[in-house]
Length: 259
Image (cartoon, rainbow, N blue to C red):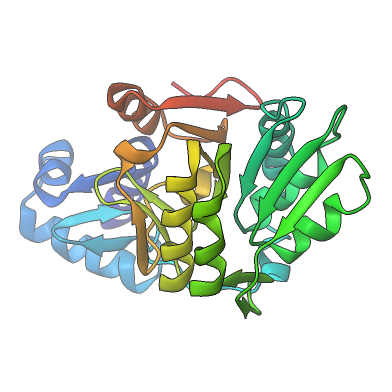
């Protein structure tokens, strides 16, 4: 087997399994761990994978804080379908919390109130989208505006929330690591999200499949604190199985997931 053949097989195996230990790759390819480490070093230098704690994964798990206008251009169709699915969970006369992020923008675009609906949100864009519906009462949280996300954070946003009780929180995230938990790139946003979770009876995470296996700088919560995740059909079968084992309600939109 040539080096090029090994590199191709390593990438194929990572597509199937998301991450693999050096020893697992060595066994699968019937070569030494030293050879695999050299291969991984070359593949990492060419930005085809990322090495972390003795294992290889396809993508760098650490997320940069990107502007909302950039994020809006990514996974547009997946977010649209996720938004439609999430909007179907909103009931007449409901009181809900909506956090920030482009996935919740897609949710807001698909909310059409049939009766009075109350929405508390940190997102200026969500408030702007919903402001066209006269049947929706909007409580816009105040605080420090994050220019990158067009949302507010900080103690003034957090202080208002204990006065309310909402049925559901719809929350976008920057990363979902099944061992570490859900994360965002901003520690003040993570703090606000935790207060939002305490205000809602149910926490629903809206996340396209690219968010799995990744981490932002600030942890929001452990996986056990999440009630439901809505994602798209490109989510890995390995992830699906682990989420089911955790008892998290997983909703997959789009085509049938890969097995």
